[in-house]
Image (cartoon, rainbow, N blue to C red; front, side, top):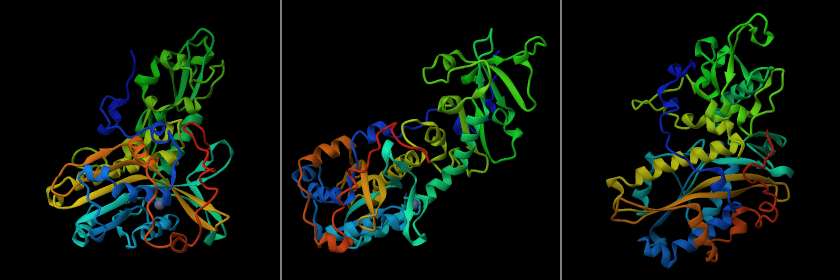
Length: 414
Ligand SMILES: [Zn+2]
């Protein structure tokens, strides 16, 4: 019989339950990001274009409030300066720490102006380097240029899950003793939640990874158990997988072959809403954030979180109370780099979506990243309302875009 330990999972981790999809790294990073200041220039041209007008959006600048929703981190303050330079208006803040969207701010913003143009998303630090560069940390010049996490809030959220996942990758062992089709030795804390006192639990999905226990036989050394571990026969799907490790005769760490289909991870202390979903909506996606090979966790959590916040934003502006107002919402991930030449933080922007909601309606028009790029490719950037180099305190960065060498699957850890 194939054992199952799914009965110990919280309902939102049920592997048979459908989890709403978020955008794939391969789709989002098909092309390199924009410099944020270039993106805003093109966005302003687009809003003034006949194409925006055909979508029902009238960009009356005298009645338009630029808005931002992003983390309060000073590494993304260039976003504020850039919006100020392009519009001549101080941007209204619809954000919270971690790059969360603050729904409560929308009512105030439309009280100030009937047309809102929003730019928002999570942010992530990037250190250029060979091999695709590193994500999740940035120099802090005010701390003698020591490195620190960026976005600190999202990295702190993911950190205990990542530590536990990395431990599991090292301590779960796979091997192929003669006469078997593969065996996995699993510490019991990764099988049943009560074997660990930590509030974050990682459980191997026995139904997915195994096809039954290895029975004890005195004459077969590989069946002799180690205290605190259980032995199972590996599922043929794992053994046959191209990505799986070469199975030798002796136990070796499963490593990154522990992909999302083979485990679940959850926080027993997480606050759960009445609908059974954690209030921290990133949590159901955590195993995909940790175990994806297309991007490091720091970048993935920024993309996932921005998807979820964008959902809150669009849900909010479709409500009846905002029918009289117009919105143009540019959502994406801010990628922060410290530019030594300028002595300043520079922000790139990878667009994830654009929503246009004209006044008098409750439904909006949604545009995907490829559509945004296609529209922008035909547009010259608008002229800033104020001298942008003076407002930002530096000239347009020369090296940042070419130093971004990440591609899906090509990056350095840590
Ligand atoms: Zn942050």
